[in-house]
Length: 209
Image (cartoon, rainbow, N blue to C red; front, top):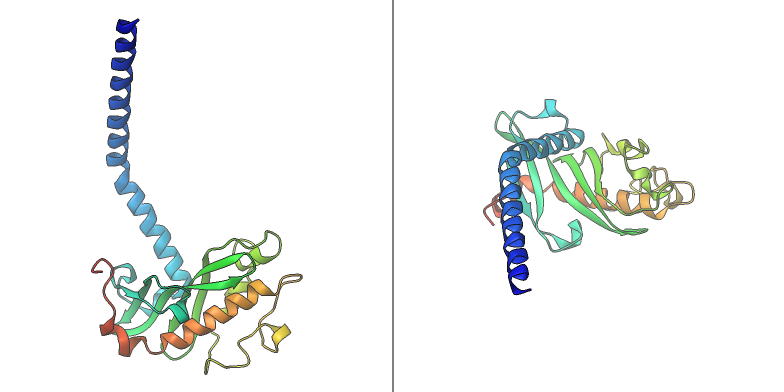
């Protein structure tokens, strides 16, 4: 009985060691590919919120960490990707969060220039109701593309609201809370982004925190 248990124990240990070694080998062989695919996805998303013809630097390599709970939705540092043309800052994409979605937080990436014009907004994560609030996704609806080219003059600009609140943005049939949250978060972020060039030296680079 004891010998049998020992044999099983040895077999189990050998199996565990082999599995661990195999997992390590697979990770080593695939981590480069995974990183490349992540970079491609990131570049594709950034190009949706900042047109690639506006800048000539590598956005992913000029990343800063911005903290502003009141504007960006929480206390966590949010990534800001700075776009330059001939060395001069021309635009940026900033992660932000609308905390007041119907089903909780809606995470966004907002691209703007530094004069109040939104270049693009995309949802990166949400839990809104399928068939209603999920129209904020481009795979469901083109609603969110309406932000591109819209200019904001101040944080109380009356145009920056859903039509039910007197603004110019459509709400969804049976779902006003979700688009209202996205409009307000994009508005707050666009106003905040106008001060980025002056504040840039206050923000640490990604990886330096």
